[in-house]
Image (cartoon, rainbow, N blue to C red; front, side, top):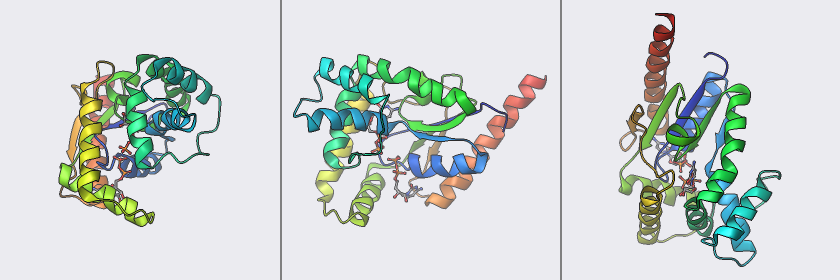
Length: 218
Ligand code: CDP
Ligand code: CDP
């Protein structure tokens, strides 16, 4: 892989973006960034302060404070943080505050980055873009299994409803909505396990990077 290569991995909640992107990063020898953690950390800060995650002024201040600090300290993976992340992610000033940090991360050494808008907004000229999906039923099963593995009992109907609300919110927002880039490679993982999804993704990316190199040489 040429130095500075960006591989974008976008898609809806619990589609398997993180699992796949981490493996691709190892395979291509690139750093990995889970951009969802940025929005989760901003949402968490507002929840911890007793503030409404839809409060744009407070959320922008939290985003600006965050980028200088350590992300790994708080619980960013619970259901409350899911919804708070999606709420702050709809605020344009929050996205603006996090944009340069993400671009600097990718430009330093190239990267595999997973999120919602990597291929459309953060790196529209990424060398390879994957849009990873799975049916709502399968994504609900995956999220439930994850919660179960963490010892959290959850109601399947509620988990499914929360995924639906969050995806609808992420798709409907005017700024950086969740949608595939025009040149994204679509990967439906409904009937693929993590290993099969990785194999399929590798083939898609290698053929795209190969074509890219041919075009540059021509
Ligand atoms: O990042 P995203 O929310 O899209 O998904 P994830 O955090 O990678 O979680 C997906 C879960 O589904 C993990 O527990 C995986 O082991 C599992 N899974 C997967 O990632 N890919 C498949 N093709 C099948 C299952
Ligand atoms: O792991 P999961 O797919 O459930 O969520 P995540 O990737 O951690 O993202 C949490 C929330 O952050 C999403 O529902 C989006 O609203 C927001 N997000 C975003 O707007 N843009 C990104 N690049 C990444 C996440």
